[in-house]
Length: 249
Ligand code: UDP
Image 1: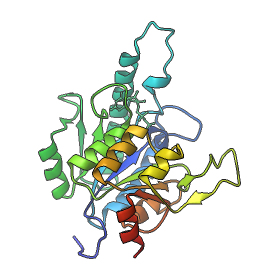
Image 2: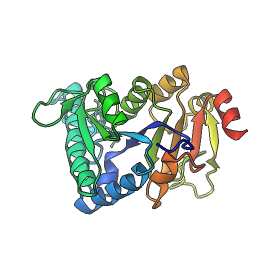
Image 3: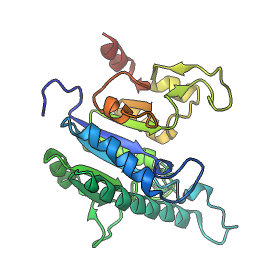
Protein backbone atom coordinates (compact mmCIF):
# COMPACT_ATOMS: atom_id res chain seq x y z
CA UNK A 1 0.00 0.00 0.00
CA UNK A 2 1.29 3.46 -0.84
CA UNK A 3 2.36 5.19 2.38
CA UNK A 4 0.98 8.59 1.42
CA UNK A 5 -2.63 7.42 1.54
CA UNK A 6 -4.79 9.36 3.94
CA UNK A 7 -6.91 6.37 4.93
CA UNK A 8 -5.87 2.79 5.47
CA UNK A 9 -9.38 1.36 5.74
CA UNK A 10 -12.79 2.84 4.90
CA UNK A 11 -16.40 1.75 5.08
CA UNK A 12 -18.51 3.03 2.20
CA UNK A 13 -22.26 3.15 2.77
CA UNK A 14 -24.05 2.74 -0.54
CA UNK A 15 -27.82 2.98 -0.72
CA UNK A 16 -29.83 0.50 -2.70
CA UNK A 17 -31.09 3.29 -4.94
CA UNK A 18 -27.60 3.51 -6.47
CA UNK A 19 -28.24 0.13 -8.07
CA UNK A 20 -31.13 1.33 -10.15
CA UNK A 21 -32.14 4.09 -12.52
CA UNK A 22 -33.33 7.25 -10.73
CA UNK A 23 -36.94 6.91 -9.67
CA UNK A 24 -37.12 3.21 -10.46
CA UNK A 25 -37.12 0.16 -8.23
CA UNK A 26 -35.29 -3.15 -8.42
CA UNK A 27 -31.80 -3.72 -9.77
CA UNK A 28 -30.53 -2.29 -13.06
CA UNK A 29 -27.60 -4.15 -14.60
CA UNK A 30 -26.14 -0.99 -16.19
CA UNK A 31 -26.29 0.94 -12.93
CA UNK A 32 -24.66 -1.87 -10.95
CA UNK A 33 -21.86 -2.16 -13.48
CA UNK A 34 -21.28 1.61 -13.55
CA UNK A 35 -21.07 1.62 -9.76
CA UNK A 36 -18.69 -1.35 -9.80
CA UNK A 37 -16.39 0.49 -12.20
CA UNK A 38 -16.30 3.52 -9.92
CA UNK A 39 -15.46 1.31 -6.93
CA UNK A 40 -12.79 -0.52 -8.93
CA UNK A 41 -11.14 2.82 -9.76
CA UNK A 42 -11.11 3.68 -6.08
CA UNK A 43 -9.81 0.28 -4.98
CA UNK A 44 -6.70 0.26 -7.15
CA UNK A 45 -4.90 2.65 -4.77
CA UNK A 46 -4.71 0.03 -2.05
CA UNK A 47 -7.06 1.50 0.56
CA UNK A 48 -8.94 -1.33 2.27
CA UNK A 49 -12.63 -1.04 1.35
CA UNK A 50 -15.69 -2.49 3.05
CA UNK A 51 -19.06 -1.65 1.53
CA UNK A 52 -22.30 -1.67 3.48
CA UNK A 53 -25.04 -2.01 0.93
CA UNK A 54 -28.62 -0.80 1.47
CA UNK A 55 -31.85 -2.26 0.20
CA UNK A 56 -34.14 0.72 -0.33
CA UNK A 57 -34.43 0.06 -4.07
CA UNK A 58 -36.35 -3.08 -3.15
CA UNK A 59 -37.90 -2.64 0.28
CA UNK A 60 -37.58 -0.53 3.42
CA UNK A 61 -39.19 -2.12 6.42
CA UNK A 62 -40.26 1.14 8.02
CA UNK A 63 -42.16 2.21 4.89
CA UNK A 64 -43.75 -1.12 4.09
CA UNK A 65 -47.46 -0.86 4.72
CA UNK A 66 -49.31 -4.15 4.84
CA UNK A 67 -52.30 -2.85 6.78
CA UNK A 68 -51.11 -4.60 9.93
CA UNK A 69 -51.13 -8.05 8.35
CA UNK A 70 -47.35 -8.23 8.10
CA UNK A 71 -45.58 -7.21 11.26
CA UNK A 72 -43.12 -4.34 11.14
CA UNK A 73 -40.27 -6.53 12.38
CA UNK A 74 -40.98 -8.97 9.53
CA UNK A 75 -40.84 -6.12 7.03
CA UNK A 76 -37.45 -5.08 8.41
CA UNK A 77 -36.16 -8.63 7.91
CA UNK A 78 -37.48 -8.44 4.35
CA UNK A 79 -35.50 -5.22 3.94
CA UNK A 80 -32.37 -6.94 5.19
CA UNK A 81 -32.86 -9.74 2.66
CA UNK A 82 -33.17 -7.08 -0.04
CA UNK A 83 -29.67 -5.89 0.84
CA UNK A 84 -28.39 -9.43 0.26
CA UNK A 85 -29.81 -9.42 -3.29
CA UNK A 86 -28.06 -6.11 -3.89
CA UNK A 87 -24.87 -7.50 -2.39
CA UNK A 88 -24.91 -10.47 -4.74
CA UNK A 89 -25.41 -8.22 -7.75
CA UNK A 90 -22.64 -5.87 -6.68
CA UNK A 91 -20.27 -8.75 -5.97
CA UNK A 92 -20.61 -10.20 -9.45
CA UNK A 93 -20.34 -6.77 -11.07
CA UNK A 94 -17.17 -6.01 -9.09
CA UNK A 95 -15.66 -9.34 -10.05
CA UNK A 96 -16.54 -8.73 -13.70
CA UNK A 97 -14.29 -5.65 -13.59
CA UNK A 98 -11.45 -7.55 -11.93
CA UNK A 99 -11.95 -6.93 -8.20
CA UNK A 100 -11.41 -9.63 -5.61
CA UNK A 101 -14.44 -9.60 -3.31
CA UNK A 102 -16.18 -11.32 -0.44
CA UNK A 103 -19.85 -11.01 0.42
CA UNK A 104 -20.58 -11.38 4.13
CA UNK A 105 -24.02 -11.36 5.71
CA UNK A 106 -25.20 -10.50 9.20
CA UNK A 107 -27.90 -13.18 8.86
CA UNK A 108 -26.45 -16.62 8.15
CA UNK A 109 -27.07 -17.76 4.61
CA UNK A 110 -24.68 -20.62 3.98
CA UNK A 111 -24.43 -21.33 0.28
CA UNK A 112 -25.03 -17.69 -0.61
CA UNK A 113 -22.42 -15.79 1.35
CA UNK A 114 -20.05 -16.03 4.30
CA UNK A 115 -21.34 -15.09 7.73
CA UNK A 116 -20.00 -11.79 9.01
CA UNK A 117 -17.20 -12.61 11.42
CA UNK A 118 -15.20 -9.56 12.42
CA UNK A 119 -11.77 -11.18 12.38
CA UNK A 120 -12.44 -12.87 9.08
CA UNK A 121 -13.65 -9.63 7.52
CA UNK A 122 -10.49 -7.89 8.67
CA UNK A 123 -8.40 -10.67 7.16
CA UNK A 124 -10.14 -10.28 3.80
CA UNK A 125 -9.53 -6.55 3.89
CA UNK A 126 -5.87 -7.05 4.71
CA UNK A 127 -5.61 -9.33 1.68
CA UNK A 128 -6.95 -6.56 -0.55
CA UNK A 129 -10.43 -7.97 -1.03
CA UNK A 130 -13.40 -5.65 -1.22
CA UNK A 131 -15.74 -6.85 1.49
CA UNK A 132 -19.44 -6.33 0.83
CA UNK A 133 -21.48 -6.38 4.03
CA UNK A 134 -25.13 -7.27 3.59
CA UNK A 135 -28.16 -7.91 5.81
CA UNK A 136 -27.39 -4.78 7.80
CA UNK A 137 -26.86 -5.43 11.49
CA UNK A 138 -29.00 -8.58 11.38
CA UNK A 139 -31.53 -6.90 13.70
CA UNK A 140 -34.76 -5.13 12.76
CA UNK A 141 -35.82 -1.50 13.41
CA UNK A 142 -32.57 0.08 12.28
CA UNK A 143 -31.19 0.80 8.84
CA UNK A 144 -27.98 0.14 6.98
CA UNK A 145 -26.69 3.56 8.09
CA UNK A 146 -26.42 2.11 11.57
CA UNK A 147 -24.87 -1.05 10.14
CA UNK A 148 -22.25 1.08 8.36
CA UNK A 149 -21.21 2.96 11.48
CA UNK A 150 -21.23 -0.20 13.58
CA UNK A 151 -19.04 -2.06 11.11
CA UNK A 152 -16.72 0.92 10.74
CA UNK A 153 -16.19 0.86 14.49
CA UNK A 154 -15.61 -2.84 14.82
CA UNK A 155 -13.40 -3.05 11.74
CA UNK A 156 -11.45 -0.03 13.01
CA UNK A 157 -11.98 1.91 9.80
CA UNK A 158 -10.70 5.46 9.56
CA UNK A 159 -13.96 6.91 8.25
CA UNK A 160 -17.50 6.18 7.04
CA UNK A 161 -17.99 7.41 3.48
CA UNK A 162 -21.69 7.95 2.91
CA UNK A 163 -22.49 7.97 -0.80
CA UNK A 164 -25.57 10.07 -1.58
CA UNK A 165 -27.31 11.68 -4.53
CA UNK A 166 -26.46 15.25 -3.51
CA UNK A 167 -23.15 17.03 -2.94
CA UNK A 168 -23.16 16.74 0.84
CA UNK A 169 -25.16 18.03 3.78
CA UNK A 170 -27.33 21.08 3.15
CA UNK A 171 -29.19 23.44 5.49
CA UNK A 172 -32.41 22.28 3.79
CA UNK A 173 -33.35 19.81 1.09
CA UNK A 174 -31.61 21.23 -2.03
CA UNK A 175 -34.20 19.58 -4.27
CA UNK A 176 -36.91 21.68 -2.58
CA UNK A 177 -34.95 24.88 -1.91
CA UNK A 178 -32.33 25.86 -4.52
CA UNK A 179 -30.88 28.39 -2.02
CA UNK A 180 -30.06 25.72 0.56
CA UNK A 181 -26.50 26.09 1.89
CA UNK A 182 -24.01 23.25 1.42
CA UNK A 183 -21.81 22.74 4.49
CA UNK A 184 -18.18 21.73 4.05
CA UNK A 185 -17.97 20.51 7.64
CA UNK A 186 -20.18 19.99 10.67
CA UNK A 187 -19.79 18.60 14.16
CA UNK A 188 -21.94 15.68 15.24
CA UNK A 189 -23.75 18.03 17.65
CA UNK A 190 -24.55 20.44 14.78
CA UNK A 191 -26.16 17.58 12.87
CA UNK A 192 -28.23 16.37 15.81
CA UNK A 193 -29.26 19.85 17.03
CA UNK A 194 -30.25 21.08 13.56
CA UNK A 195 -31.87 17.76 12.74
CA UNK A 196 -29.98 17.56 9.43
CA UNK A 197 -30.82 14.44 7.49
CA UNK A 198 -27.27 13.10 7.16
CA UNK A 199 -27.83 9.59 8.46
CA UNK A 200 -30.09 8.03 11.04
CA UNK A 201 -29.77 9.69 14.44
CA UNK A 202 -28.70 6.30 15.88
CA UNK A 203 -25.80 6.15 13.44
CA UNK A 204 -24.77 9.76 14.17
CA UNK A 205 -24.94 9.17 17.92
CA UNK A 206 -22.81 6.06 17.55
CA UNK A 207 -20.17 7.95 15.56
CA UNK A 208 -20.26 10.85 18.01
CA UNK A 209 -19.71 8.56 20.98
CA UNK A 210 -16.73 6.86 19.37
CA UNK A 211 -15.34 9.80 17.37
CA UNK A 212 -15.78 8.10 14.00
CA UNK A 213 -15.88 10.70 11.19
CA UNK A 214 -18.39 10.57 8.36
CA UNK A 215 -17.95 12.08 4.91
CA UNK A 216 -21.12 12.64 2.91
CA UNK A 217 -20.54 12.96 -0.82
CA UNK A 218 -22.22 12.67 -4.21
CA UNK A 219 -21.55 9.31 -5.85
CA UNK A 220 -23.23 10.43 -9.08
CA UNK A 221 -20.20 12.50 -10.07
CA UNK A 222 -17.71 10.29 -11.91
CA UNK A 223 -14.53 9.79 -9.90
CA UNK A 224 -16.07 10.88 -6.61
CA UNK A 225 -15.88 7.47 -4.93
CA UNK A 226 -12.17 7.44 -5.75
CA UNK A 227 -11.75 11.00 -4.43
CA UNK A 228 -13.59 10.12 -1.25
CA UNK A 229 -11.46 7.03 -0.66
CA UNK A 230 -8.31 9.10 -1.22
CA UNK A 231 -9.47 11.61 1.39
CA UNK A 232 -9.95 14.56 -0.94
CA UNK A 233 -12.10 17.41 0.33
CA UNK A 234 -15.37 16.76 -1.40
CA UNK A 235 -18.79 16.83 0.20
CA UNK A 236 -19.33 17.41 3.91
CA UNK A 237 -17.13 16.12 6.70
CA UNK A 238 -19.05 15.36 9.90
CA UNK A 239 -16.78 14.81 12.87
CA UNK A 240 -15.84 15.93 16.37
CA UNK A 241 -14.50 19.46 16.89
CA UNK A 242 -11.07 17.97 17.60
CA UNK A 243 -11.11 16.01 14.35
CA UNK A 244 -12.32 18.97 12.28
CA UNK A 245 -9.56 21.19 13.66
CA UNK A 246 -6.94 18.57 12.83
CA UNK A 247 -8.39 18.11 9.32
CA UNK A 248 -8.26 21.83 8.53
CA UNK A 249 -4.75 22.42 9.91
N1 UDP B 1 -32.76 -3.15 7.92
C1 UDP B 1 -32.91 -3.61 9.22
N2 UDP B 1 -31.80 -3.73 10.01
C2 UDP B 1 -30.57 -3.36 9.59
C3 UDP B 1 -30.43 -2.84 8.29
C4 UDP B 1 -31.54 -2.75 7.47
O1 UDP B 1 -34.01 -3.95 9.66
O2 UDP B 1 -29.60 -3.48 10.36
C5 UDP B 1 -33.93 -3.10 7.05
C6 UDP B 1 -34.74 -1.82 7.23
O3 UDP B 1 -36.10 -2.12 7.09
C7 UDP B 1 -34.26 -0.97 6.06
C8 UDP B 1 -34.08 -2.00 4.98
O4 UDP B 1 -33.52 -3.13 5.69
O5 UDP B 1 -35.18 0.02 5.70
C9 UDP B 1 -33.18 -1.61 3.83
O6 UDP B 1 -32.07 -0.88 4.29
P1 UDP B 1 -31.94 0.69 4.12
O7 UDP B 1 -33.26 1.36 4.29
O8 UDP B 1 -30.87 1.15 5.06
O9 UDP B 1 -31.46 0.81 2.62
P2 UDP B 1 -31.01 2.10 1.80
O10 UDP B 1 -31.97 3.19 2.10
O11 UDP B 1 -29.64 2.45 2.28
O12 UDP B 1 -30.99 1.64 0.39
